[in-house]
Image 1 (cartoon, helix red, strand yellow):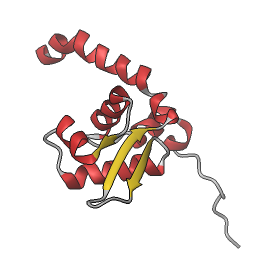
Image 2: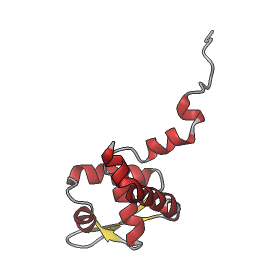
Image 3: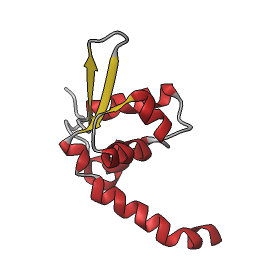
Image 4: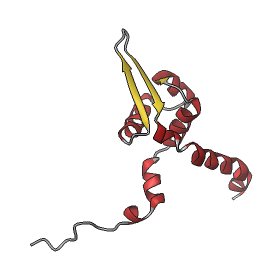
Length: 117
């Protein structure tokens, strides 16, 4: 007989900030998502890569796939030669506009204090 509880209460299960950090973890996650939100229209992969340079193609692909799986980004493939793929923040992804703008504002407001430390 298994004596382990069916659900374990980990910090990640209880703390919304831990879950948020998991959602946007990685050096490029927030810049990619915030850029897609600000652009607010479909954008091609190469255009997005230039907008968040110097990100690698591999890292951008990995991060976009993770956002797509979580419903934050929509990927649309057009049957053309050569194939065209566009990305856009979903309605759910766009709900992060205000919180991410708040973080950007905080960083700007406190940049000197952070560098002084």
